[in-house]
Image 1 (cartoon, rainbow, N blue to C red):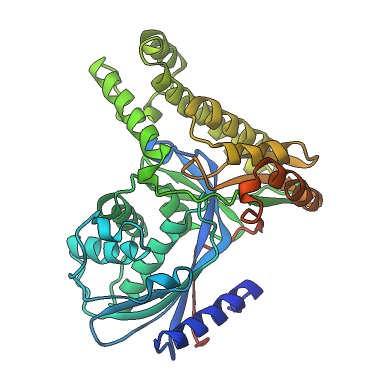
Image 2 (spheres, rainbow, N blue to C red):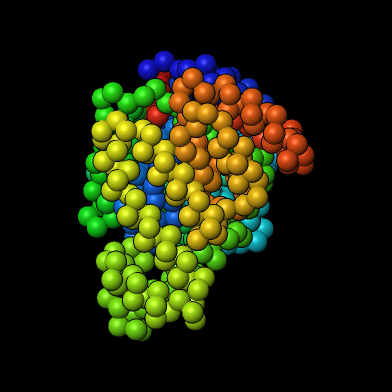
Length: 414
């Protein structure tokens, strides 16, 4: 498999970083893990909904090899000030330790902690250089990193896992239990299962994966990611945690009211939904708005799935837009810069749909765009966004993304 131009640039950064930090990568493998673009349901994973998305070509690259020392030695070219993260397995800070809360190394420590907690015997150390070009919010940078490190450590320790959902669970546990980020399984799932040219449909009921090709006759379109340039804190420090807590609170209220639900996705029947709104809408209006989003998003989900199979990208875009408006108005998880991006591109002919991406508050928005309108979208953002958000005039970026495999391994490059 040949490297793309971006991959070659990443390789050059990795080689230079290895030289600067005296890390020998002769004969090393390179594992590349993708970002993800969620088509639906955003914030559905921790509410129990089905999920639908694709892997996109912004990546984490890890060049690695066993070092026969037993130590884990890693350097991130994205965070050079953190230096080489070096530690002996089973000798890491405690979960959520304040001294590592602002370093990327907490992910490496967390992976060692979780793998050992779950009974995986890591005897072989690893030397590695990391580099990534995934924007800092909305495209699952942390999930991509965790998946990559777990798979690479399993590789050098000759640990085989048949069910890739195991990797999903381990990566989620790193964020939930070690770092303290309350993420669901959407990001890890969409990265680990992503397949080039296909959308991934995940059903939480049986954890099954179906690959959905875009139907014949679909118009030529592009996925565009609109990075606002904002610095999003971890999910544990954002509105994401508040929304998750609210949803869990409503589930508890409904259970006490003798509704047979274990998550908000269990509310599917129109009559049951209307009964809940009538019973709790006045006392808990905000919580019922969260339910409104999940309920309506599930109604839209099946239509989006069928539209994708039929190649009806206009309908996919329309639903994507409707989902964004509901995220803004009912789930209240968006942010001013995210919505500014959406407002700008919505005015451009050929934009089929747009909404915020990811955890919320800050980060990136996304759009589905006719191929012939891509340059017009770039021009509109370049003109309007710096005027509306001058503090981020030199930080924002527009990415045009392809649908790619979630995990690739290269050998013979180093």
